[in-house]
Amino acid sequence: MSQNKMKIPPDDNTGSVSNWSIDKTIAVLSSALESDSAWNMFTHLLAIIQEEARKFDYKVIQADFNFSFELAFEIANDFVHKKVAGIIYHPISSEFEYSRNKEIIEIFERQGIPVVLIDKFFQTEPDNYSFVTIDNQQGGYLATQHLIELGHSSIAFLRYPLSSTVMLRERGYRKALMESGIRCIEDWIQVVFPEHKISDICDYLFKQLESQPTAIFASSDLIVRDVYLQLAKLGLKIPDDVAIVGFDDLPSARHMNPPLTTVHQPFEKEAWHAVKFLIERMKNAHRLPHIVLPCELVVRESCGTESSKGESVELKSKASTPVILSDSHPEGERKEQIGLVVREISDVLYSDIFYSKIIKGIEELAAENKYEIISSVGFKDQKTEYAIIRGFSKMNVRGIIFVATFDLQPPAQAELVYLFKRKIPFVSASYVDNKGVSFAGADEYHGGFLAAQRLIEFERRKIGVLLATSGYHSGAKRYQGIRDAVDPLKLSNQDIHIFNIDLTRSRNDFQSAYLWGKTMDLKKNPINGMICQNDFAARGLIKAFTERKIRVPEDIAVIGYDNSGIDDRDKIPLTTINIPNYEIGRKAMEILLEHLQGHTETIQQLLKPTLVIRKSG
Image (cartoon, rainbow, N blue to C red):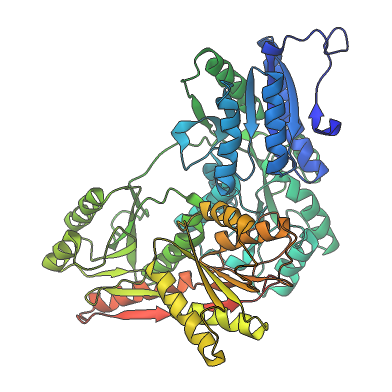
């Protein structure tokens, strides 16, 4: 291991580590943060961990793995060899790299070394790990709600590439806008990444867009420093022209000009609980304590409020798992209601990417037509789904829209029979292979056709198609579109290769495709173009190809599917098929409105995807 990866503090008295007791040593393993300022944020947390560990007579060694899981495995095995007493693990991208993170944790647990996660946790299996995190969703909600209360309705959101923490902060941002009846403008949500510099983002938001934001919520204080500089170059004053709220409450926030309003992340409490939980696990390996800490908003001058002292506004978050969410309405103005059935999606990233846009389209058209949406979320089985539908019936909802459900395919399920008998109109916001069910969905055939057509235009004639083994309807339709696109070229079956792997329409597909791509036999399958089931799989495949020194797109062009907005550490923007999820939501609501007005015939409409051309293909 290179020496600069391991940071070992000297003994307090002797200046050496020679007289350390290894069973009184805690190791901190972290994913590195690329910029110096980002690293300073983590070193702030690390310093607190060291201070708290010292109170329990433990010392701390720390190493980072620079976003390389290969290096992470090397460091983990080195920690095992050193026989450290316990591990505090700061994982990379949490859910997106869940399986790799899990492998690292298992290296320690096989040797009886307890692990506590800090800052992030795995929503896939939350009860299987001990963790300390903050309520990121409520933090995003508090920041956005504060700006709304100050009179802003045009609020941009700047974020780093996707991780569980950032996605939850964005979910809070969207929730605050929705509850206030403010439309979320997708152009105002910008990703800060090497290819998307703050200067370019600010130029786009404040010079190119016709409708410009009056406020910015940044997912990290680290983003704000450059935003201040760029706004000044554009001649915009803070907070007179643009109000700003950050997230983390780093020490630099109060010294900015003007001082930054921000969501306080309780680093001290996180560090204290992480050390405390780790020591508890040392005593009882089977105990898995975890906690989600509340956030608070620290109001300063950057958003236009009079608070030069940076006094804390303690708007504490509450952990909850809602079953029925309802928009509020003034007394005496109760609207007619539409029920929205949304099954629990354990993959928060997947649900935010796809279902949030569909739901937004439904909600906006419903509001325009004076209907109130009540949403059922969080159920995990079909029995509960039936109960929720019956509950909606007792509430006398006018109609129901299914966004994510268990089964609307034939034969008709009990829930459909029940709705038909009750004469409650219902619509699915996705394709349903049932002639009796109205729906609005994506034309998957057209999407497959576009993807293949792009490869053909790119002079690719050896095409691979990566599909799920379970055979989703969408996969079959896409493949038919691909076949029809290449048929005029009279390509043989040897030119079109179908690869079926274990894909589940979630971020785990990244890992599945990555592992498959690492061992794919290119001599047996000499492809020069790939079409993937979704963007997660496409990104995993690109990572595998890059590590194998296969150039994308020069050697193999790669096309994803869904235009999910996934941003990882790869430098190759993804060509993909855009699914019009927002429009699907509005169309589903439009169909339901027709049924509410007396239209009794089944209405089924497919909306055409579009091709988004970037560098990968």
